[in-house]
Image 1: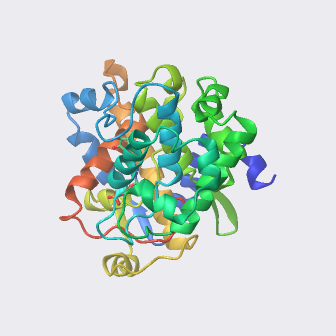
Image 2: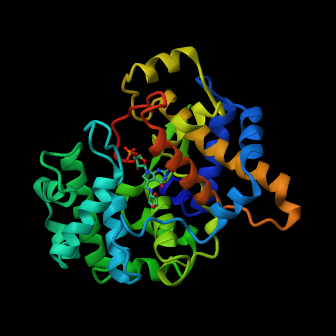
Image 3: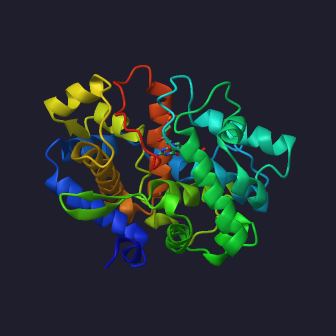
Length: 327
Ligand SMILES: Nc1nc2c(c(CN[C@H]3C=C[C@H](O)[C@@H]3O)cn2[C@@H]2O[C@H](COP(=O)(O)O)[C@@H](O)[C@H]2O)c(=O)[nH]1
């Protein structure tokens, strides 16, 4: 089965399987079940309820009008939601805020026609950044792909793509992989195809958050999303002693040595991170599942861990660095 066809099986279970394959075979990292137990233990009933409450989506930072333009805005944001670290002062918030300003200044700025023609300078303007952003030409190509395909297949509107998924996270990820090659976040690990689909999954999570689980944000299988394999959460799990890096890997990461995209080190960090959060979710289920306690979905555990990483980034050891369009 080609990688692309394999995604049609069920992309979300494909990511979970990939993560488990990597976790079992990893040589540069280990996932600590004691660390996971400790983290689960540290989550009070109050915290679990807060995390599981209607989503903590940041409606101030993001454009969020509960209408189709929000779906367009989030697709543009998550098409560009990767690799900020080469520009030390640049981060995700600049992207989210920058595109919101562009939209406020020109309601047509994210139309399929405009996206289909955008160039590097147009991307810099979307970020509202004074100098070129990392991988700027690649970002422009990704937006042109979005604009072209939205125009061809979805009447120019991301909302039509989302509606076609009919309330299924898995179906929306499949549609995105089928429609936009730039979202096909896969690699080959020890001769085997592995999938992470981070930006496609985070688009579903952001829709769910922005629309509070209703309308264009209704996903009956939201619980099937895995965590989003970025570069911030692995660093948090390492500080929580859930991920143990080999001395060789620790030296490279702490020395801010760039890890090759698709290399074993990078893939083991991404795969073990996904596996660890799945195990944390299962540990919480085992501990509280029978009490009727409402438990956070993986996407909410992801946001919890990501917010910890954002807040603590000056105190934590460096995150790993890979030049990539995928996270
Ligand atoms: N796992 C995970 N990774 C996430 C996010 C988000 C944005 N989430 C917001 C959206 C809705 C809610 O309001 C969330 O707050 C960005 N990233 C990734 O982090 C990295 C950026 O780091 P820094 O350079 O420090 O900004 C980069 O790989 C980016 O792709 C997330 O939620 N989960």
